[in-house]
Length: 234
Image (cartoon, rainbow, N blue to C red; front, side):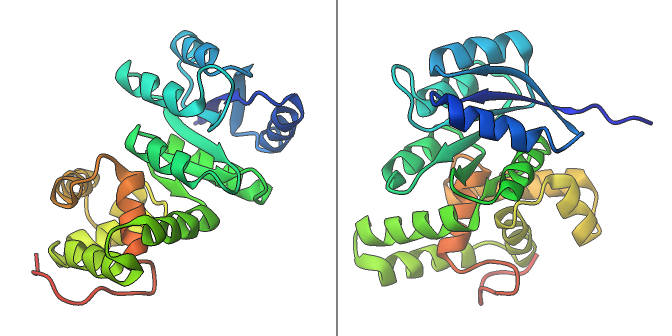
């Protein structure tokens, strides 16, 4: 059975950047670019028209930026996942985009493989944070949060420790960029069970989406190969 390609919209106001993104995505036969634009407002209209699986949005564009476009896509109830493109020095924008419902973040200067991995992850319903973005967001939160870096880490670890052991397992895999189906296969459970765990995790951590949960997991040091002691069992 032939799998339908992942349909992608590109939005970046710099034509050369957009051409580079297009060239990278064209190397993957499982990805189809259905529309391009340099404007956030038009990006929203194109998403409504083409219903792509993933919208790759520059975080800063003149007029309507990627953050506002992502929020509008979320409010419209469309199933399109949003993958944000950022550059160094845009940490405040990343935090705003997280609260606006973005599903993933990439640095423009990152490796081409990260763009492909990010598109596939977001299309599969996962959150995707490139390692550089995750490290920067955690560092930024530590530098600007009340109480300093140590207090933020302790606070994040306390939040995570309140989860059950299984929920921490699921959160670790969310932070690694796995979709619900991938998590289910990794843990040997049905996908519906994972969905229930994800809903509980988001509610108990007080975060809006998987990407925000992934940031908190990184801040708590809860990544593959690491553990967070304490907390109740299932």
